[in-house]
Image: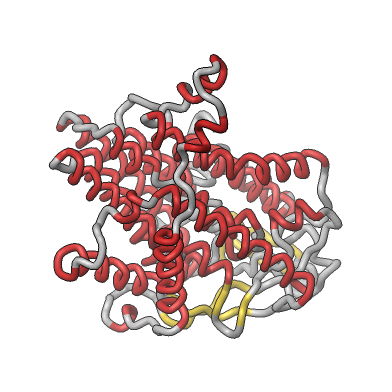
Amino acid sequence: MAAKSQPSAPKTKSTSGLTNGNAAAQGQWGRAWEVDWFSLASVIFLLLFAPFIVYYFIMACDQYGCSLTVPVADLATGRARLADIWARTPPVTAKAAQIYTAWVTLQVLLYMLLPDFCHKFLPGYVGGVQEGAVTPAGAVNKYEINGLQAWLLTHLLWFANAHLLGWFSPTIIFDNWIPLLWCANILGYTVSTFAMVKGYLFPTDARECKFTGNFFYNYMMGVEFNPRIGKWFDFKLFFNGRPGIVAWTLINLSFAAKQQELYGHVTNSMVLVNVLQAIYVLDFFWNETWYLKTIDICHDHFGWYLGWGDCVWLPYLYTLQGLYLVYHPVQLPTYYALGVLLLGLLGYYIFRMTNHQKDLFRRTDGRCLIWGRKPKAIECSYTSADGQKHHSKLLVSGFWGVARHFNYTGDLMGSLAYCLACGGGHLPPYFYIIFMAILLTHRCLRDEHRCANKYGRDWERYTAAVPYRLLPGIF
């Protein structure tokens, strides 16, 4: 459900263990082949309660000033009934449906019909047609990388409307926030269901499908590894990046516009949230080619977890800070605001430089300098599903010598900064750091389990050299 995904381990000369063969490759790529009782219980819990969690947070802000405890107290004491809360919840409207349809259509058109031109004039940016990692079937998919272009054009249209055209109010997203929630759910469930049916009846590559025999697990975690329509429309790339992440900064801008409309000014906390989260979004699209090597693309299947998660969970729960600040405008003391800004920028620096060090090490095969010194690495080997032996290197210099997933640590620092910008009045703004801590810790453990199986004793040597995962001296 998260947009934030990082490459699995600092390595080079590796094909990630994704090779030809089906039965032989079991356990080396993608999700599980068999479902244990704990996994099934977790899947059913999320299918049942994740939509309710989203609704509860948004409803609490709309009806109870972002308090999560007052609705429960009202229900427990009889001051309110579920029917009363539901009756006060705005339904889907024709206007919201038109807005959402126009939004998704615009993103599909920008994704499919407009080849990238940003890479032709932006130094250092890698866009246009790029190759992904080797898939389980041994294929190498090509992608049209044009997310930065789509983001720029979308925001250019937004600002042109706000300052020149006047087609709609900049507060349009906030004003239709709950009706748009129902539209996002419709798309999320439709895409997820279509992806499952497609995996059974007309998969892009049948060799890359996994079936557990359990409907709920297949529906949530996905059947098909790389579902596509035609040559270019890739479900995972589109829904992971568009429409959710392109919308992220627009949603924040709409919240800021609403704060201006209601109170006559925009608080420094709202500015902080907009700036820090915009840095992350721009970083995501600037490095969209790098994203092709992440867990989401290289290992996850496309099911409800990504389909619904990217349509609903991401845009509605990742933007709680801005939503909260509409209901509770916070003007931070200057010293506090500067501290939050520095924390966010430091977290981003660690996140980006950690990944840069790994990419530099990979590109140069270790013939580079990291922190002014020749990098150290652990030589390792593994055997792929086709029986071939491969050699790899695990970097133990720079940030990768501080902790095995120090990029996650930087990510969490930035996430905490978003939340601290909202002060300490209520819990909803802090949902993001709690969720990201759980998500990235789970992702860290899942990735290490896969690497331990892949590298064996070499992985033990690596963990001995770099003993901590996220927090040096703690974890």
